[in-house]
Image (cartoon, rainbow, N blue to C red; front, side, top):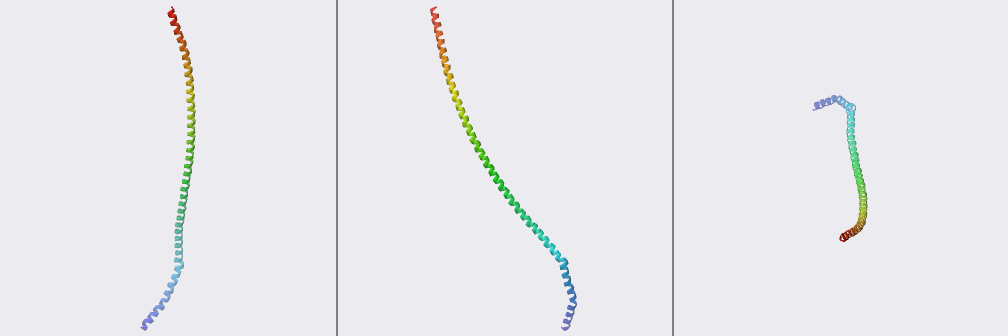
Length: 149
């Protein structure tokens, strides 16, 4: 058993330079290869995560601007509808006033036409009355003259 332990000790003694070379290789690769590789991977991850974060922030800003735009458009439409309603009411009021004015003018014109027609009718009756008396007088005279002859 002692021989085995001596052989094992010899193997371990011969393995120490390999182990030291292995440790040296490990630290060398870690500092020259894996360290920069880890740094590059970390920077890449930060860049992609940062890009995603910026994209999400940009999307959130775009959604906010879209919401504000929609709200502004809704307010503008509401304002336009109010202005249109006010204009429509004004036009309706003006139209009602014009209709009332036209009705008053037509009523006055109708009354004036009736008065003129009544005066013309009265004048025509007087003229007819005078003419009929004159005609009756002529007829009576001719009849009386015709009997006298």
